[in-house]
Length: 225
Image (tube, rainbow, N blue to C red):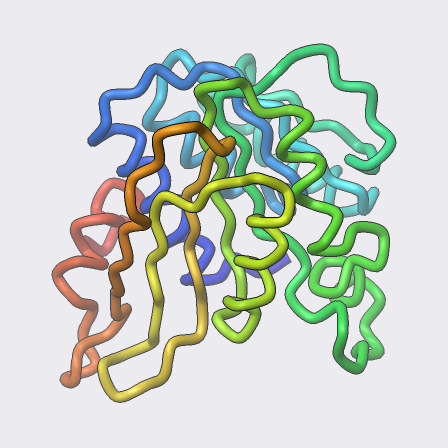
């Protein structure tokens, strides 16, 4: 599977958020890990992290497992080949991260691998909140990367399941482009809630160079920086 720029940005952002808050998040669950990118980024910056990286597609699971074993964090990343909807969890997680299905309501492409990765008929976006709610620790956080066009839909779904969105980052390619991704931080709904923080970030500036905000987040992961 190809590693995308927005996925790299998402991983760097969520790790940065946890670091800035000085939160001790040990147990993490990566739902639909793909190549294992997010798990590897999290393990790199959190030396105490124990990560369960779950992937339903067998070939992709093998790739993620290979990537984890080849890393310096192999003993802290367990890659699991399973459908998250039927997996028997034995612990709660401090962090749940997911780059879930993008296009479940659209015409599916002919490529079956891309069909599973992007449409994921086995896990609908509407089913994800129950999995998060059932496996997140009381003080835990969840992070999601979604298409911007599903903004209103996901907010309604999370509200319906009593999940509170604490931060939203709208992502666009450049200041000239419309938003195309949505990065969310959330938690279990509590009695005293603060307002949702809303920000935005551009990957490129008007000169087609990476923005300073993007470079600050990715400097520990991109060799070119």
